[in-house]
Image (cartoon, one colour):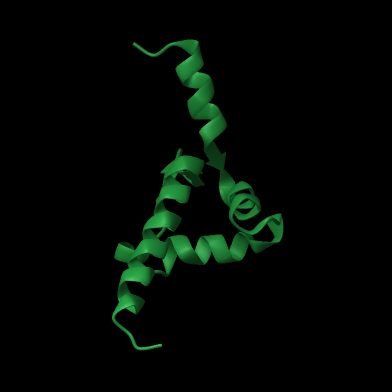
Length: 85
């Protein structure tokens, strides 16, 4: 059973809308279009962990985005490890 503390943590971890996601990822709410493009035009295997809440609200969890970014960095590091400098 979820406690009120669990619900607060989830609420604090959830970004609602492209503006909040843009502010979290880029430090500005002005990259909303970029966020939308990442959600729709990037191939699914490379797409950030966005989800829809309701009919049209794009959402993301801060913790999942940070983990996804770390995974992207790790994958890039492994790819470039075999390349000559």
